[in-house]
Image (cartoon, rainbow, N blue to C red; front, side, top):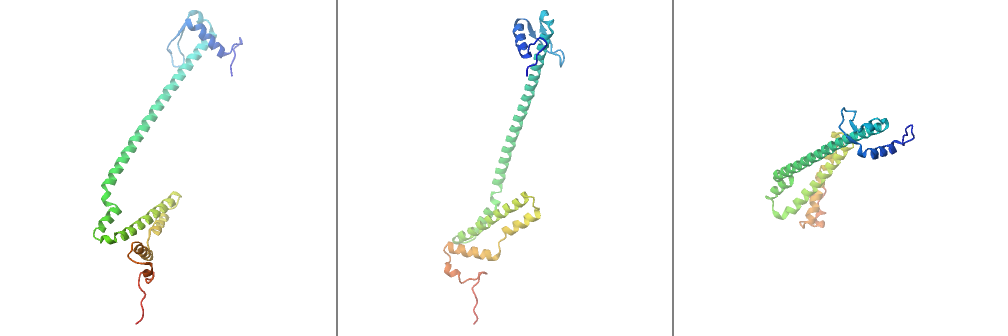
Length: 207
């Protein structure tokens, strides 16, 4: 929308006219107060209230734009600083985590199990590793189930109970797993395993 003065001239048109007329008649000065910009013009133009009003509005607009640009620059610099700090913090965290993993490498369950197998006949290592990998997978599933319950608002007691339920390995499950691993690695045949019951024992016969 263009506002018009009593002479019928729009401010937009008047501003263009003023800038053209004043190209050889004025120089803009600094503000004398915070809200009143100082405008240096020729004596002739000072007597034209309309032109002076337009010039004053132009100076006020310039000042507001400069302030906005200054604020935006400060915001941009602050954003860059935060991003830089976050990057440094992330790098420090990753370095610390890598160092911790390196320091704890000899104390992980897999490392401990490897040391345990040093005292076991190497012929049977595959069976033992099969048991370890099976239990490790159950533990991962248990952890995921526990995290899911907590994420959906469940209590820690319920989450812990679910973890134990999923991660637990009943004796019958251990026996079945061992039977399958023995067959898989050639230590027994499926036909031979049929003679053992669910408890891993051969049935007894009466004399």
